[in-house]
Length: 328
Image 1 (tube, rainbow, N blue to C red):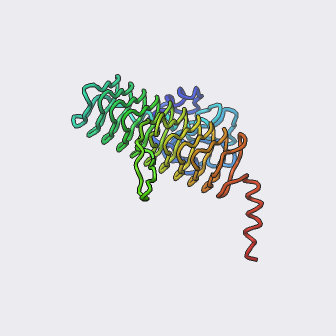
Image 2: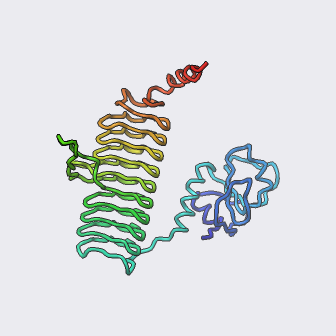
Image 3: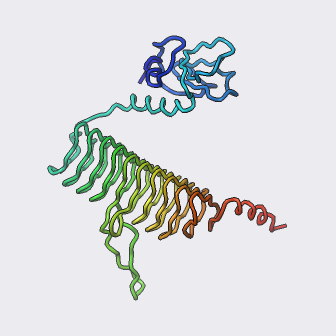
C-alpha cells in the first residue's frame, strides 16, 4: 500500500517542503533509507544522515533548521518522535483493509448476532447466542463458544479460542492461539492422594483496549470473573490464572505467570519470566524486574522490586554487590 506525502501531512497536520505527490510504502531508519521509504529525524546526533539519505520522505520537527540542502521531501511536525507511532498505525490501517461477511466454510449458530461490518474467516465457529460487535474481524480457524460477547472493532487472529460465556470489550486485539476462558487449575486433594476437579463456573472479562500476545492463556474464574481491565497489554506466552484481576493500563512481558486470585494494580510494569504468587495484592504503579519472584503483597504504591524472592531493587543491587564476591 502506497501513500503520498500529502496524505501523511494531512494526518499529522504537518507542513510539506518538497513534492506532495511522492509516495512511500514502508518506514525505515534514517541511516538506511531508500526510495519508497519514509524516515524521521528526532535525535540531533543522526542529523548527518539527513543530507545523504535516499529516502523519499523524512519527518522532522518544525523547530529544526537544516544546515545543508535536503533531497527528500520533508514533512514538518510538532514532535517527530511521537509522530512515528501514529505513522506506523496509519500505514498499518491502510495496509490491513477491513473485510466483512462470512467465509463459506465458517459456521455461525442461528441465534448468534453479528454486527454490521463483521468478518468471520474460513473454518471459524461462532456459538449459540454469542454477540459480535460491528467491524470486528475474526480470522480463520477461530472458536467462539456459546453466549460469548465480543465488542466493536476487535481483531481476533487465527487459532484463538474463546470459551463459553466470556466477555471481550471494544477495540481488543487477541493474537494467534490465545485462549480465553479455559478452566482454572482447581483441584481438591483426597485422602487417597488423588485430586478431585473443582468445577470452574465463572468467566473471563476483558475490558476495552486490551491486547493479548500469541499463546497467552487467561483462565476462567472458579466463581465470578477473571478480570483484565481497560488498556492492559499482555505479551506472548503468559499465564493468567483463575480469579486474577489485572488493573488498568498494566503491561506484562513474556513468560510471566500469575497465580490464582492475585490482584494486580493499575499502571504496573512487569518484566519477563516474573512469577506472582496467588492471593496477594500489588499496589498501583508497581514495577517488577525480569525473573523476579513475588511472594507477598506490596506495602505501597510505586514500589520497584527485583530478585527472587523479590524486594526493593536498590537494596537488591547492594546485596548483589556483596554476594557476588562471596567466593573470594
